[in-house]
View 1 (tube, rainbow, N blue to C red):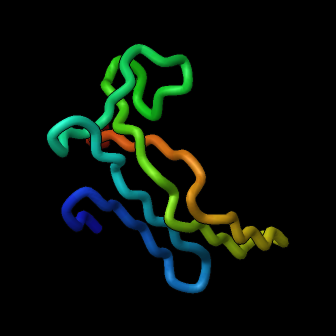
View 2 (spheres, one colour):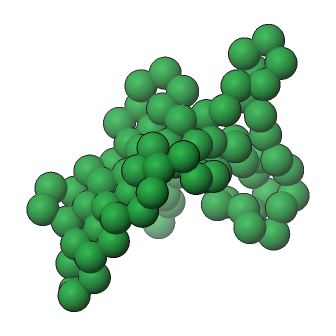
View 3 (cartoon, rainbow, N blue to C red):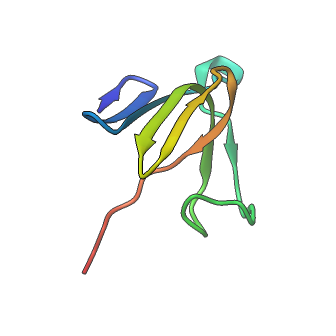
Length: 79
């Protein structure tokens, strides 16, 4: 789901995550280009704050702390 500068994903019964873009000068997004850790190579990544990540499936039970760093970017699946 997209809500302003926040993005979230929820798979009921399995996991959820939410990130919020960090605001730079004059409220613009802070971006990183050409990083080897890119979500989508060749596309600018927006620096974000992780608001939480949970995952419970296949004997995994993750509950990551909030306020850690994250990246987000737009992408489109094509096939």
